[in-house]
Image (cartoon, rainbow, N blue to C red; front, side):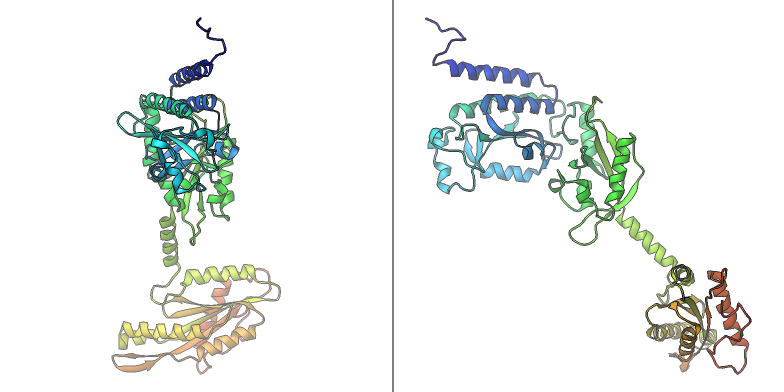
Length: 508
């Protein structure tokens, strides 16, 4: 008597398995994109095989694998969109035991003898007495008809706690192979993958987007709603100074330098709250090895997939490496404020320093400007040559710099004039004493007519407390006036105090 389909009997488990396979086939066949196939494959394996942890990873355009679907513990589900480097996958498959077309990656707790514990290396042999161990993983490489690796299915945590039987291994092989054939028919499947993470339609346009993402000369990263990295291209990884594998799943706040994190996080939030692209921000990326690289970044909020349907936004972060640009700007700025011959700050730098010192002075403090004239430098140039003049000027700078204390800095004010900016001065006597010490120096050098020396002339102006008498211009004018009087005063000791000058000229 023929048993009805719904009747119990020895064939019931077989019929249940066949029914599950039929359902799995229909589910996979109805998928319209690679990611839908991955989701259908995961659901089919969950229903057919009762594994507690399942992941489906598909090869992307660069050859790496992206976790397209995952089910199981939260830490596994959170890996969706995670990029796995191809070399690591190839190594794992090569080291695993061959169970037919499947690969069994043994737990480190298993001994080397376990590799040959299955007679004839047949899947499922001895499974009834062989428990599954933590660290065991069963892999189903998804190989296209031409031998290309399309993806990998991995399963873990069997419900019965045992290594899978031969029948369960065959079901895994059948479902994975069928899904591989369906994926291989997708127009964008050859050599490509979900570069933007899940939910990218399998179309020529999507493939073009993925190719642009991977080949872009600027860094691009896709973030989820929590601002964690779903995927990043090679240019972004290079700018950050790490690998795509390390970036996947990382919080943006951990990737950016701590001092600049708020700038980039605010830009991302701005893009999410007001759809569009944020204003560009310049920031540094974090680095374990010295200062991180500088980048100019924009954030753009986009729908989760090509359909534009409602769902959590993703943020596309575009970053240009501007480290060299900033270095060039800094060097250009340094040249604009640095004297090429002496290496000292120039007149512009000195005036800026005076301005900052005036702004920062505390009650009871003054700012002093000492102007030093290398007397007769032009005569040295005429008599001994310009190289000799340069030599005596450099020697003068060397000697004067050695006499300065904390809060005093030497500048080349122009031509044959040098200047010392003194901060936190308490009373004019200290500044006048410094001017006298500087004027006592007699720098010497050797020219074509033999050794010679130059005299120095110094004058000082000290800021006062009266309102309106603390500007940079008035302080410089007073110092210049005092120096000019010193030049005109015959027989007066060089560097003598300028207290006898008219009010507002030497002391402001």
